[in-house]
Length: 257
Ligand SMILES: [Zn+2]
Image (cartoon, rainbow, N blue to C red; front, side, top):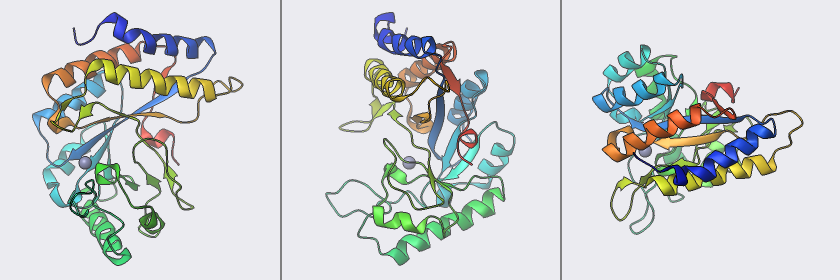
């Protein structure tokens, strides 16, 4: 059993309150760092397929193989551009970032364009104009480059940043991994508590007049680095969420236009 009933209780209660208020809460799923088809990617899609969920795969353009494009053509998933090479250009001692402030506008534009060209070469028209910055970090001054580089959606982590006209946010809010000091599953109790808080924020902020909650709640995963505990947590979590009347799984295309 990956988590106990008591650990689940705050989330269940929040979702029940939302349902009692006649609210439906959109959830969506972004999985990062796709490069090649693999048994781990198959496991992710087997899980999302089981519950009718269409996830967004954040693909690293410079590292992705044509096999991934062939695989995606048959899969119930969408693709977005995840930086260019997932290379760290931050200063020593700073948090990892491919598009830090110290990168010139010209360098940032070149990376964005190179990524787009590679995505076009791999996927043709079968990818979405969504930019997902590696490590969910993107210097604010580079945001102005996004529309001219053809991006219509920006997907980071947490509250959405200020974006230029023509670019919508589609952020994620829950990361199931702990990255430091060691990389491992964050733990069921911490993930469930964070989910309960995110549901509560939306429920409290919403008006029940139209019965919907505007800001979709995004789950972020990294199929290549999940340990067995992380997979089992996800399987149990998605089963539970999908049985709650307030939860509506959405693909990203349902809430960006
Ligand atoms: Zn990444």
